[in-house]
Length: 352
Image (tube, rainbow, N blue to C red; front, side, top):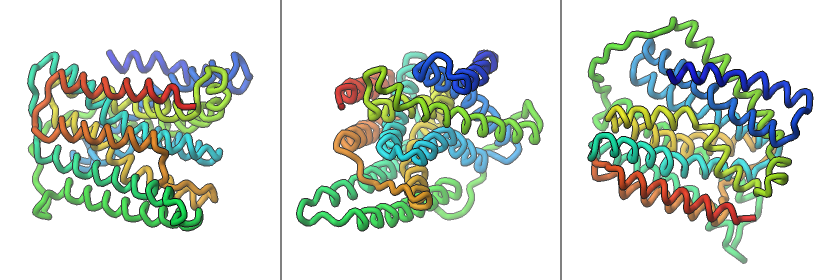
């Protein structure tokens, strides 16, 4: 049923193309249409990834799902970076982490709890994910503290080199995290419990859909980013608000839907893995890749986030840590997470 709705929404893709090429309807209409067109494309991307995972196995499939689940987000931010919108890129990074921890996890806890009551998941895995998230946020705080050092502040060049160096360290940590997750604490591969899935499409078809969806997302991202600045001005919204609130929600829509769906099916380990795993990938992999991409494109982007972004990141990580380490969840915890997201959104609305 869901994929039928997504198929019907695919009509937005050619509509967005026509509106942009023919300059019809103004920037706001183009922005909204291209943004909505990302929803069915992200759904197709996620569905094709799951189909490929049936052939590749659960471990490789899980890694593929996490990587391609953030493909839209990565594409959007790289295009925005190429356009020189470094503030929007950093806001999008912070917004993605905040959104995964507060909205995705919150909606999963809320709806899953309303349906099943108290739900349980592996506390050890949740603790590892929460610790990694805390490490990532601390790593993002360090450059901001160094950059605000007053008379002891390093030069801009040194801050750029600091960001590049930290990006490399974060990627290494993420690789170690993947090794730990895939091979287990003992260093040897753990046999996964057998699951019998039947693929609904052949592997070449699934790979073809992956490629086509990714290309379409690139095109829609170009249109979306091109309409971002004039839309923000016409709506009376800051680029900061659009970057930290709207762009991450659009880019991660597929993961949002899947995490909530599996929570409704009482598969909280998977739901928690999607929400926290995606946030970790943004913090430990996507962000460093963007820093290195900025260096390669001669559009430097540093890991110096502003105070608003740091406040939200620290708050989201703290409450996410508190609600996930006990191995249990219920609807009130979901409501608490979503409430914090709404409070942050209200505060960011008034940031110029």
